[in-house]
Length: 171
Picture 1 (cartoon, rainbow, N blue to C red):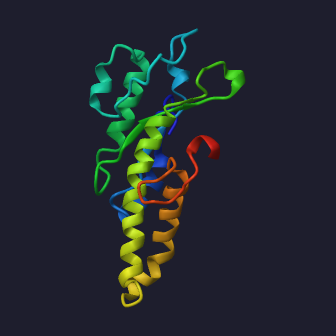
Picture 2: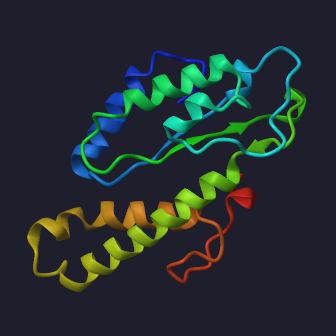
């Protein structure tokens, strides 16, 4: 999601479809935070976001950005399953003039690392009895796909024991 874009219908439609099939994922990242910074402002010195409602009152975060993030979190409230992790990010280009260019990547890595464990558990469960369960056998490629995606994007080493590349080297 883009922080400055209130029209998220397409993103929400896809997230809801995924959530109906997989109620415990995905998490949500919102990018391009700098578009709602005051003119001439830089990223905060330290990452100030929790991804939860307490961000709504954090004076370090510009008021328009606080409002936009609160609005986007409200859009995700009615998703089926577990509440998604909400991760504010700002991935910029060098010519944008913001440092670091991957602001919030550590928060994203923490969320992906936690999801890597869940993905590994899903893969292990599918392998243990997938051959005898027709439905699980049909969905196996999705379970493996999500597991590989989560493991590939997680910081190394992943909690599940794999040696996944860090997100920084992936970018």
